[in-house]
Amino acid sequence: MLHLPLFLESPTSFFNSESSLSSSHQIPSFIAATYPTNSSDTPEDRLQQTDCSPIPLTPTCTKISPSLAQALVHYTTSNITPQQTSREISVTLRVLAKKSPCNFLVFGLGHDSLMWTALNHGGRTVFLEEDKSWIEQIKQKLPTLESYHVVYDTKVTDADELLKVGIRDECRVVGDPRFSECQLSLKGLPAEIYDIEWDLIMVDAPTGYHDGAPGRMSAIYTAGLMARNREVGETDVFVHDVDRVVEDKFSKSFLCEGYLREQEGRLRHFTIPTHRNDSGRPFCP
Image 1 (tube, one colour):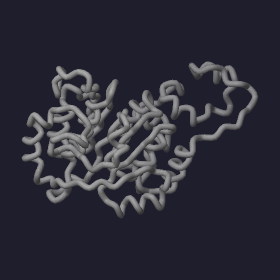
Image 2 (cartoon, helix red, strand yellow; image 1 turned 45 degrees about the horizontal axis):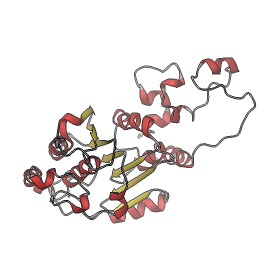
Image 3 (cartoon, helix red, strand yellow; image 1 turned 180 degrees about the vertical axis):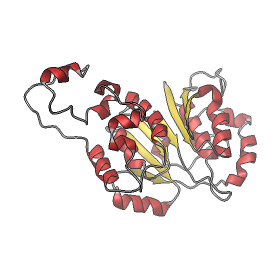
Image 4 (tube, helix red, strand yellow; image 1 turned 135 degrees about the vertical axis):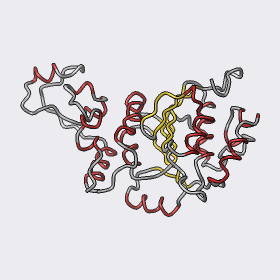
């Protein structure tokens, strides 16, 4: 029998499945705020349990965000859980706790999409999906999700040749992916995808588990190019399924081992700074 994701069953078990947390300040504030303290606590007890300003003793009526409400209903009435493990999800969650609301681009539309949107409440979360019929199915169930169809012209069998292409000079030039001369760059995305500076990018698509699948070669390369081309700051890029050859090699080559911050299970987290105004910065540190 399938169960709810840990972060919905219990806020504490999601962050630490082996030990209980003693107070709500150990949970990111945007999640801790949705779980009330014990009703038997006195006002003084509640003040001691939080670092926040004192809560007025007069009861107030507040609502949880629509995206969180929808996620709670969806996951509590579904026996399908997100593809990533709770430990893998927690890597991205920690970054969202610091950066949200923010701009979050996800390659892939799946059972975890509503979760990512809810966790980035107030920000913009966009999904890029290869399967047009799947987009239509999801829109019927979850019409509030923002998703776009993407066409890939690669195959997993092209990976070795594309890895060689990626070391050419034109693939090391930082700029708008639309105008890149690199064969790996995705140039057919909706215009606004290129115009937005993404704070987080998750590469969990397209399909890459068989030879005839598009593979994630271009998605990984383009995510790195977008990160390097932002005006200021840095972009957190996550790649899932790094136990597979393509995801492993391409993430190390184009997101760079020097930018690798963490790996949990099959998920890698890279933090890539802007290269736009620093022509002397090497592609990889």
